[in-house]
Image (cartoon, rainbow, N blue to C red):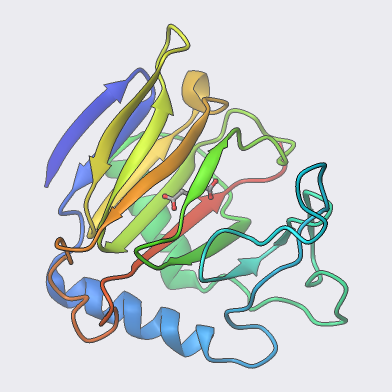
Length: 216
Ligand SMILES: O=C(O)CCC(=O)C(=O)O
């Protein structure tokens, strides 16, 4: 494990997962992702002044626990307009989040309420944004990354946008004074697949889970 601190309250832990653990998590993610109702899909987005039918900029996504609806930018116990509940967050994922916090980012009483899974191809992107749809603006966002390395933009304490590479098998955490920092993704590097992902991300994709506590 290698711990980096790009700014106050933003921590990246490289090699948090060994190849066997990464393969096990990816196997579980793709099993969930295959479900025709609750698995990977392409959400609708709110029209804006540039696009009548904007596209969510990743290959696929889904949520466990509370569903983040990018049409209304809110959380719901049901999936978008469907009458279906997302998969619940399993104990093994909640335990992993608590283990990560206990090891690298002490945060008592963290409640794991939603896990958003983004599946990126090498030409996907994620514009600069602030995670502000949650009522809780201090509990950390925990990112679990598998597969290709990405260029991750983040706002430093002076308001300047900087970037850092986040390889697969890493974890990142930002809370407290960093919780409302602007962030986003640049390139997904196709020559950098992390060990354990080969059997699942054959086209050099990246999978990222972001886990959040939504309520105070
Ligand atoms: O895929 C990532 O690492 C970033 C995801 C993200 O920005 C978000 O979920 O708000």
